[in-house]
Length: 90
Length: 482
Image (cartoon, rainbow over all chains, first blue to last red):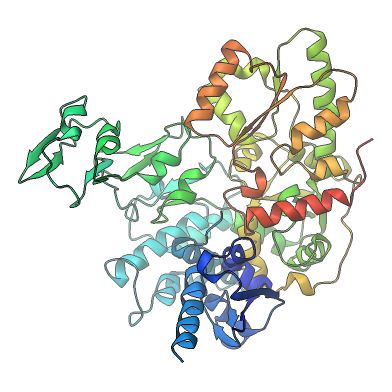
């Protein structure tokens, strides 16, 4: 199966808003996801600039191209598991 | 591991909003802040949107530098608190304050029987309880909270794991028993005992413990432009923001700081003096010496282990020497220490050399409010007073301070290092024992209040693991202390 791409925005805004907690995935991947995800960091993707108070929606993470606002470690993993489940069903 | 949680996100959002409000001279509208952050039609975290707003008001009050305990009139608007903040010259507030209405008043009985209890025939919980606090009611064990002494024996012996430990996170995190319940069941900090380590505030799942901030005082001074503002970056800065620390130097200048210096330069002076002191002490036959750069540890000794005082190094901290160099050069400069630490605030209050202390989180909020992207700033050099060494730059990681001293001592004395990596009830006991019986064959004890060192301080932004690697890389690319 193709690896699921997780792109963490590490622009200043996303970083201050807590992107670092998602970076934990760079150190330790939960057992069920080993070999199934690819984590990268990206410079400011400017999602925070899209609308007023955009920084309040950070940190942003792109999962297989789909943007997630207010991302947390748990939310990212939930999304990844949902994608895997859907793929397995197909 | 640093885990950004809902409570800390709310705090960061608010910090950014407050920074924006002051940077944009929008103080008249500060009374609207709780409403703007919690509009009527959006979700609320607590019982209702009104309680959320009330708590946001208190959080704002603390960020404006006021202790929640000082409130005399609930109706006093934030705009008045803001005005008072802008008028004050001195800061003598305790660093930590409790928002009592945000404190959930965690249950006092720390052991709880769950429904997994089968009401078994053996009843080991009841028989092993030293205080006879357990009775069997309706076929299940029941703990009498008045009799329970939280020893945990019942939990240990239950064959069904039916008894659980429900901690009071802030009390459990405090290394010195400085936080406890008042008669209403709300937590209260005893400032006579508090060492300002910030562990309670990091541990509280309700975000009820907050720091009083100096962010407004700094913004005010930046805007006034009549003083030279010198940002002194703690060695733990490396890895705390995207980009390099040279990008960070430019970002801070864009924020309005006139000079940016590295506290690692001051750390070199600390190393030199501490090494000299160590060699002398050993010659004099002193058994051991402890480091003195962690302010929470120094507070802990002064307040809780006075018998250890003679063993603590008299050398001042890297922050002290850095500020001294800055003020030597320009006595009118305003010095702002930027670091991960809350106890540094108390150290600064006691000295005339450091005017303000900001955390990485607070400086981050200011950068976001001003829309300054660190990684996109060009790189500039520090306004170096003296080039910092690898050893000085290694201070923020556990083992770094002792290694620096050992490097400097060289073959002038035999050095046997012991590390206290993180203060808690157990390590406090160990330190007490050191004062009486010596430190188990070592002769220098490095004490870090935060486990892992300053990179794991209460107000860091980066994952300590990741920050540690980046500090190590920075150290590897630096010259040894001569």
